[in-house]
Length: 428
Image 1 (cartoon, rainbow, N blue to C red):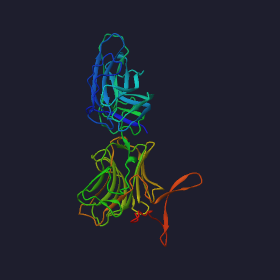
Image 2: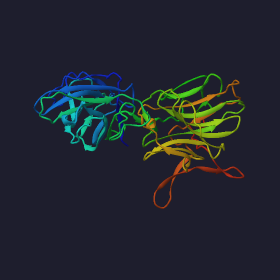
Image 3: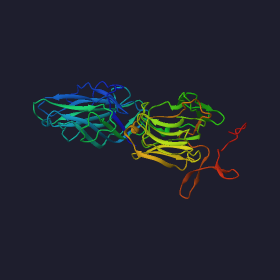
């Protein structure tokens, strides 16, 4: 999967002492966070050049969060930035230098894009300028290293007239800036690496917990949520304390990944707006995807909310057998809500083109409940987050090993049952 960053107005987490690109004028003081989601009001960096010779001018530097894990950054980089020139005679073209620091230092771990220069003149009416599929140098990152991108222009004119180049950054529009688009003050500029998978944010599939000995370090919980030691599951009530089980980290992304869990039991006894839900979103701002069970109606809804509301969710009647497993999945630019009876065979319940915000590397997942008329009689029970239970085995289908549920005869039907082992004192 590709990893996208945005040129934000947020403070840079660390600023290298010197610019590393070959800039004739490197005096720019503009620095910012190369963020995993857009941030800040639209802002500009502008600088004039007056040289009669071709020269390069730095307009700003953006520094990424620290790499989470060690790995190799390679492949290609693409980017689109808003830019404009004060006059067509300026003949400005984009100039970029990208590299990796050794942690929070001025030492270069390796160069990604070496003083790259475009060939398209900046327009007088500011618009997006794009470069796609530029091969980068392969750099072996260590945890804590940062990417630095230096953007500016090359003035290819030989006039003594003063011309000004302006670059746009910040903005939080719902779509990213594209080539030739003039929405430079609303649509954010961005940089995308083809081969940074998992280096700066973890895929949501990495959140793994069987809850065998309690609620693990992946989650925090509140509002009456507790671990059921008998069944070794997490119980999430539906009450007016907004109980929940939330991932402790906001550094996950769903692009090219998935997130699933076994919902063993749904609450009963609720009225009004009582619900249980699995939620995935970037921050607590009302923008999220959700699979939601309404206790009063018995309906299951698959929602994409903005401002805490989806005007047209997909709805069906909840079936505790057919819908025992919930999954969010993203693949090839499409986001899916899915259910399964056994974590082996999945049914798509809804899909949509992946919106910009679901590409952020700042997602968090949680399981939650609510009831406006007090506690329900039983809680939801959550188990096997991004992992298969002991009811799943693999069998040979003639060409490969495939996952299948383990079933036993109940006297009237084949039903999935957990496998138990003897620990010398008890079955577990």
